[in-house]
Image (tube, rainbow, N blue to C red; front, side, top):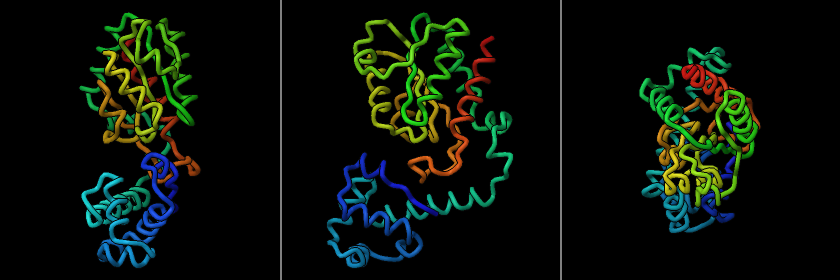
Amino acid sequence: MDFDIYKLVDKYKLSHTEQEILQYILAHSEEAVDLNVRKIAKLNYTSSATVVRLAQKLGYKGYTDMAYRINFAIKSEVERISSSSKSKSIINIDYLLKSITQKETQTFMNLMNNNNGIIYVNGVGFSQPIAQYITRKLLVLGYKAVYTDSFELYENNRQGSNLAILVSRTGETCDVAKIAKLAVSSRISVISFTGSHQNTIAQNSAVNFKVHDEDKFDDRNINSNYFYSNVIALFEYLISQLQ
């Protein structure tokens, strides 16, 4: 399995040495669990303090916690890939609906039905065309919607918006995560579509829809991934419940 960590490097400001340590642990996750911090440091020609600092930067309690959790994440991903059927990878609305709850759907409906202003929509990178699609769909259905990445609009909210829809596969995309926080501080409720529930955008959302991410370690979206098309399919379903 290939590991593309450039987003982690950018987000946590990892040094070259820290990048090499992380790449080593990812490539040798089974062995890393059985090694102590001194051995990992020696194998990477660095100090134990550097390894511990890397773990803390990434949000782990220490080296052991990092090694075990990375190994578990990789095992889970390998198992999912080997056991998942093709029907779960393609756009399958029945499979999508199993991943959301009735409470989430009802919250979405309440937010949309109680909205009386402009709906801000945002997503960047591969999520940008998905966010733009959502914007245009809302417009043709009669909603007031605007695709915007202007921090000022979310921060000052001079347009009086009370709802924002955000799309991000990782849920940690820097600009979109900042928008989510600004929206909350301006009393704008956030509806989000992300690859998991454990991320900054989800934590700042009134309702977060987890859409299956085919490859969490593929930061640059090089491999096949149906996350983006499934967001559109799920959004179409949710909108249909309002008609």
